[in-house]
Amino acid sequence: RPRLVQPKATPIFTAQQWLPPPVKPPPPPPPIAPPLPFNYVGTFDELPEGKTVLLMQQTKMLMIKVGANVNGQWRLDREDAQQVYFTYLPLNKPVALNKSAKGLAANRSNANNDNPENPDANVDPSLNL
Image 1 (cartoon, rainbow, N blue to C red):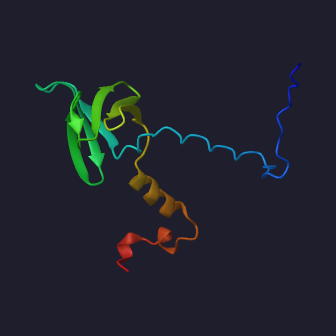
Image 2 (cartoon, rainbow, N blue to C red):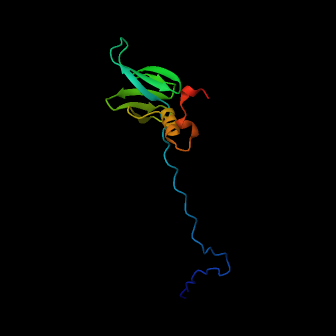
Image 3 (cartoon, rainbow, N blue to C red):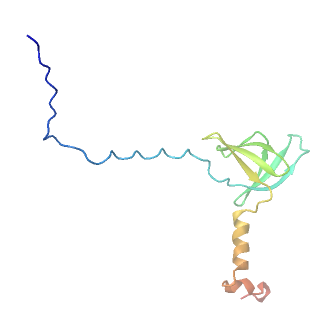
């Protein structure tokens, strides 16, 4: 006797999904180093310890030798005519500090003096108001 092959029955009353599956969110961007908290002041080339870079961090002057760690988070790698190169140690990411860039505090004070809406910008400081 020949055997009849029965096709597989598909249930017609089961739940159907008509919407496409949700799109997976893109992976987060790779972490980046924070902005440098330093401003370049100058360089001493002829110190017995070797090349030393002068940096300002807010109101504190720092004298850092090339290759030394700064604040436990930054390493001063090298310096050239235009930039000072650091490594952000927690992420091992290189960051460059432009020597000609002005610090944030200098930019803020200049912005206040150039603002025509600032009434104190045009006051003579010798008036002792």
